[in-house]
Image: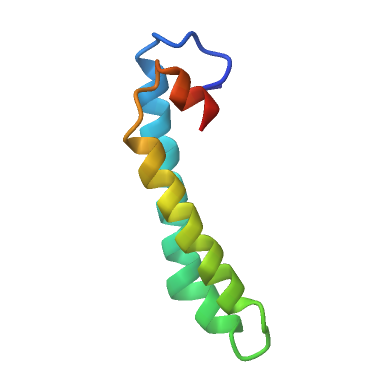
Length: 75
């Protein structure tokens, strides 16, 4: 939806914020509930934690960008 909107549409900023909240919620659930439950049987949990840290960094950078800017489109 964000990609289909005009750059100057203020709803782009709102949707970005909602997406960030949803991703944060997803990460919290996995980190605090799912990963502890499967860590004894899955060697992939440390990799998943690493991916979450990468996602957090990318998300933080995205939230700093103006949604009407070309940099936002590229990011």
